[in-house]
Image 1 (cartoon, rainbow, N blue to C red):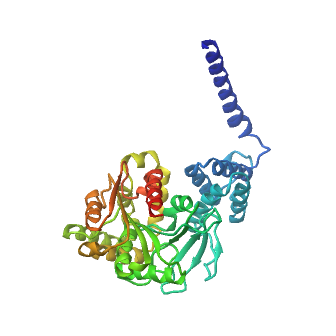
Image 2 (cartoon, rainbow, N blue to C red; image 1 turned 180 degrees about the vertical axis):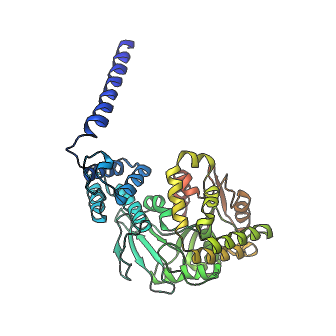
Image 3 (cartoon, one colour; image 1 turned 30 degrees about the horizontal axis):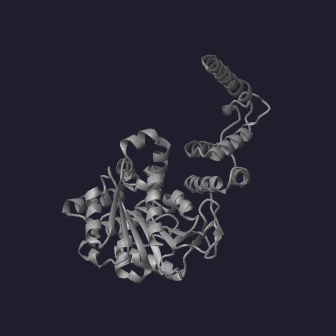
Length: 402
C-alpha cells in the first residue's frame, strides 16, 4: 500500500511538472496559436467549468482587446473579440457544456457589453431571446418595465408562477441562479423595478405603493393569476405592499432581508445616502453598499464577484436610485402586516447590517403564521452569499404549498 501511494504521488508530481512546463512554456508561447484563438479557448474552458469569476475577467479582457504582442503572440494584430464572436463561443458552449452554463455565460456577457458601451438593440414590445436569462420582454404600461420569463424546463404545466423582485441598486441578474433552479418546475418571472436595469426611470420621488402597482400592472398584463412573490430588500418591501393592496394577486410571499419600516435615525441615514447620490452619482455610495451587501469573509474570498456587483450598482440610474430610495425611506407597513393572509416565509442574513435579523423577526411576528429562517454567514444579499441555503429554504417553502 505504502509503495503504491508513493508511486502515485511521484507520478502526480511528475505529471504536474510536465503539464506546467508544457502548457505555460511550450503551448502558451507557441506561435501556432494566435491571441484571439487563445481568448476563445480560455472563454470556452472557463464557461464549461463554471469558473465564472475567471470567465468574467477574461471576457472583459477579450472585449477590450489589445495587440497580439502584448499577449506574447509576436505580432501587433488586434485581439479583441466582437460581440458576435462571443455569442458563437456561448452557442458552442450550449452544445458541448450544456445550456445552463451557456445561460450563465450569456447573462455575464450581456452585462459586460452594456457596461463597456457596446450598442445593444432596444428591447421591442415583442419577445427577444436572451439565452442567459429566459426570454426578455418590455411591458406595455407606463413606465415600461423590463422583465424575463423562464418556462418550466420539464415542459409540464408549471406548479406555480414565481415572481422574483430585486434589491435597490440591483437588477434581474440578482436572481439568475435561483431563477434557473426554480424553472425546473415553475414559471419564473423576474423584472427590473422602475429606475433600475432596463426599465424606464421616470422622475421621482417614487412611493412603495407606486412600485407595488407597477408590479400589479405587469402581472395583470401577463394574466398570471395569483403568484408566489419572492422579494429581497426593496423587493420584499414591494411584496408587502402588493400583498396588502392586491391580496388576490399573492398566493404566497417570501420576504428576504427586508423591513416593515425605519426609525428616525435610519431615515436620517437614508436621507444622507440620497443626498450623496444626488451630488455624486451612485458611485458615491457603491463602496458602502459592498460593505452592507457582503460579509468580510465573502469580500476577501470573492473579490471578483464583489467588483462585479460594485460596477452593477454604480451603473444604476442616479435618478432611479434616488427616487426608489425615497420610497424605501418612507416605507411603513408595520401596522398593516397583520392584514396579510398569504402564507409567508421571512428570510434574514445573520450578519446583515442593513436590515438586521430584528427587522425580519418583527415582520415574522406581525404576519399571521409567518416563519423566520436565519441564514448563517450571510449579510444583505443572502441569495448571493448563501445561494444553496437560500434555494433550499425556498424549495421547501414551495413544496409545502402544494
